Amino acid sequence: MSEPTIAYVALGSNLGDRAAYLARARDAIAALPDTRLVGESDVEETAPIGPPGQGPYLNQMVAIETMLTPADLLARLFEIERANGRERTVRWGSRTLDLDIVRYGDRAVTEPGLTIPHPELPHRDFWQRELAQLRQLESRP
Image (cartoon, rainbow, N blue to C red; front, side, top):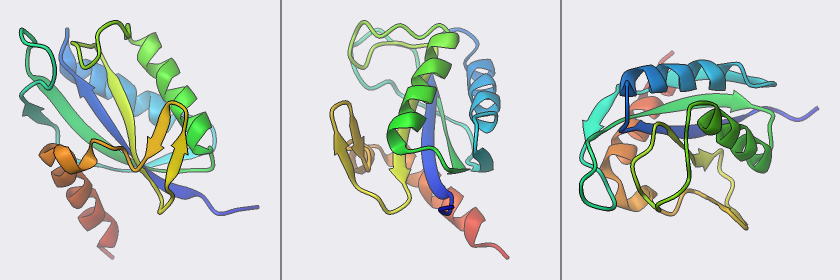
């Protein structure tokens, strides 16, 4: 049996009860098969990226240990988004919940609909802060 992989998943919401959507996402991710939540960053509010007229986002990142493949993990994250009212209509538009795989161990993945590390990682300072915070937590004895 192979070893689990540490993956980093970004959570974001800018519609409705944003904090509740993030909490439901954390619970749903922790309940995924062969997956264990091992850390979570602080929640921070950020300006929206995308079309004008959107409200601010609440963002957070979680670290998970998982045996799911990157493609299986992404499919499960899409299910969690849909269960929380996510509708994919406008690119970078407002959403109840947005879940992105930012990193999956040291793997690089380029498949239709899935690129890891996430191509926006270098452009999102808040993701870099959250990732750094999670890595600090992991390095503690």
